[in-house]
Image 1 (cartoon, one colour):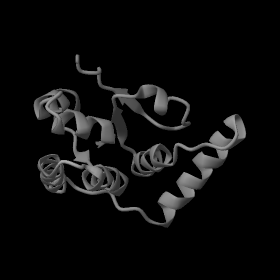
Image 2 (cartoon, helix red, strand yellow; image 1 turned 60 degrees about the horizontal axis):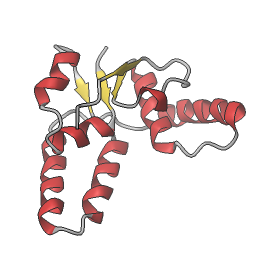
Image 3 (cartoon, one colour; image 1 turned 45 degrees about the vertical axis):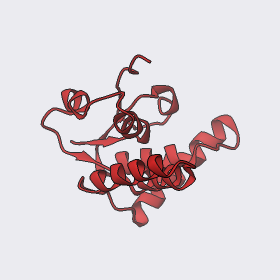
Image 4 (cartoon, helix red, strand yellow; image 1 turned 120 degrees about the vertical axis):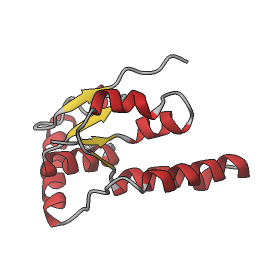
Length: 138
């Protein structure tokens, strides 16, 4: 069982709030994966950066992350996503947490734990093994 890392952790590493070793202290020898959803969220942030230096720094961080194995999305991922989204919508009405549900679907599909700074974003998702990383001090 490996770890799928939530986008917020990669952002914290890129901003220097965490060192890669902080994440490794939790994941230890387990495999670490990245989602296309995370790549999309990070690319979105890089594209919106108004400062060219920040934009370049974010793009470099994405290139470094691309060295991690990327979990593919396929038909099974879509089925897991649809089941989770329907379950959550039936409990709470329309749900706008689309990216979180995609990450959860991938973690569940592949039997990985999801490492996040935001446990509350994922704790109501059935079948998801969530591991919280403490928020770094500001």
